[in-house]
Amino acid sequence: MTARRAALATAPLALLAALATGNVTAAAGPVMTGGMQDLPPLGATTSLLVVAPHPDDETLCCAGIIQRVVRAGGRVSIVWITSGDASELDMLLIEHRLFAPAKARELGARRMREARAAATLLGVPTARQLFMGFPDRGVLRILNLDRTSRYTSGFTDAAAVPYSDAVFPGHPYTRDGLEQDFEQVLARVAPTLILAPTPRDAHPDHRAAGLLATAALARSAGSGAQLRYWIVHGGEGWPSPRGLEPGLPLTAAPRIRGVTPAVFTLTTAEEDGKLAALRAYDTQLRGLKPFLLAFVRSTELFAAEP
Ligand SMILES: [Zn+2]
Image (cartoon, rainbow, N blue to C red; front, side, top):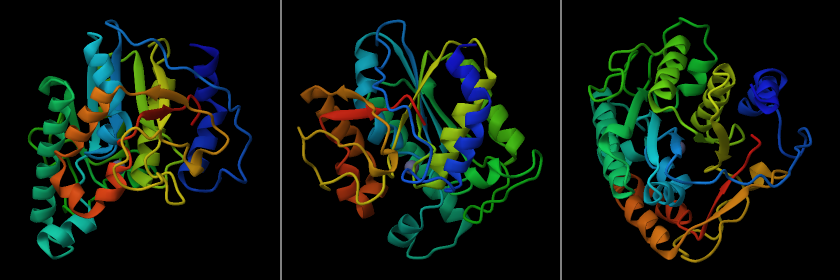
């Protein structure tokens, strides 16, 4: 166990939990070390795991670095914690109503198909496209349950993974189920580099996915994997400006003020590839186009600190 992982395994988990529940803000919170932390070298021995709370996050955060690892001959896997089956905006735009469990599951299945199309465009093979099928908007609540209490999604009405092509269909929506399924994914992928959402993200599923990855890695002493954090819901109108501005670098998000991320610079071809992958997300582009397109920039940012 490295010193960093040992540190993560103890006190900082309380900090992470505070961050995830919103009880610590960047302004009032602890002083982060803020040092520039480079990404590890990317090559044929890299096994990259991108942890995406929802379909589209993997492209927003990481499409450039995914393409780079694929091009270098490394392995890339993506695990989607949820299938995005609770987007009120989607339900309104597509179904013209808010609550219809069968329609919510159809939406989840559709977003999984979009995610497969995007991942395939980025060079990630089908066998490394892993869907856990946990409930959109429910991940943080599940992490806060006692270990075996069952959670039922208010959107899909499911209390277990309802998708037949998920990694573990039928597994229960419990904290034990979530943690064990994620650990199984880690064991299957054997990552050398994990890119996960920061527990400072404004979206609770993102905060929960960051906590899940941090805690799982802390438990798997000796795996050797490195963990870096990205953010999508970065606060205060970020990313700014909205819309497609190819060639413009991504600025640091307000919610991670005090943290200096490593800057990954995309080639023009990688930016084009990122845009092509994003265009696979018809459901998301309907309502969120200027926000989503604002991630197609010349850089992606990854921080060593949560
Ligand atoms: Zn998301």
